Image (cartoon, rainbow, N blue to C red; front, side, top):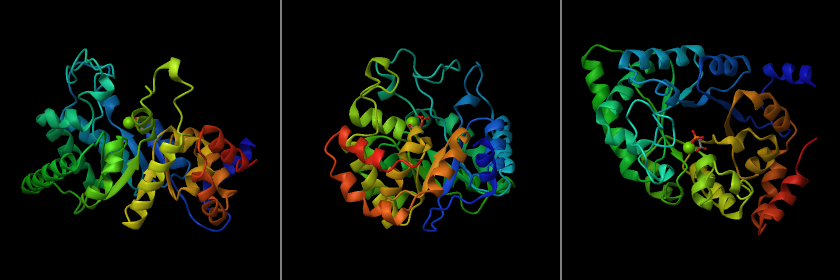
Length: 324
Ligand code: PEP
Ligand code: MG
């Protein structure tokens, strides 16, 4: 079976009825990027930049960040690379003094884009480094923890200004750097019709979306049973976000852990998803499962899935579509 999976490195991620599915990789190190490339990932769908800021006291400067981002772009040799701006908060072991300490509710605190917008020189340095890296290959910028249209528009304005500065200073940067939003705060999902026009692509972060939608701490062991994407509210939100994105022709991926679980692949395909972003660990396994799926048949089974009234109903649907 390992050999069979190994062979799939060179095969397309194509459903039985001939639809190509994009498998992007989540990455946070050189090794992940090399592995993603070797496995034939469509690109990097989520590059987490937090690790550059953790386990140290000083902030990485523009040069250090630029080199790190450029190396990811070069490492994927022309395939698109999606780099997320810093998603730091009091929930992470930050020693740089950037995040607030002792927040009563770190998950609801100054994190993600909120922190970036509150620390303007931090944001400026990161955006400069990212735009400079865009001169080396296709790069997209992804904003974490978006909850409103204003946040996206503020980042877009900064990008425009910084791009102008960089060009004046003689840097070669890409003509167009797509800007995307993580959809992981329920408010962003619900308000999406009002700001989808302001973004170029979306990535659904189910890890946080499930946590915020169900009011279940994603790290609380005592609630592990309650923390699941198999809830009618989660499915409904996923369906609506994917449907709207497809209607407006904006690329949409799921980049939470859910996307890397082969058991959920038929469900996500039924919801209309054609882009997954997952850790390289399970990429080939997911490719194998998707190659056994009939997309048209799954889409027809969506109404049945949406009629499920509870977790048991959804689990029954999932079980009946599990591929061997
Ligand atoms: C998510 O929230 O689903 C996500 C992909 O981001 P992170 O796990 O880094 O919060
Ligand atoms: Mg998240």
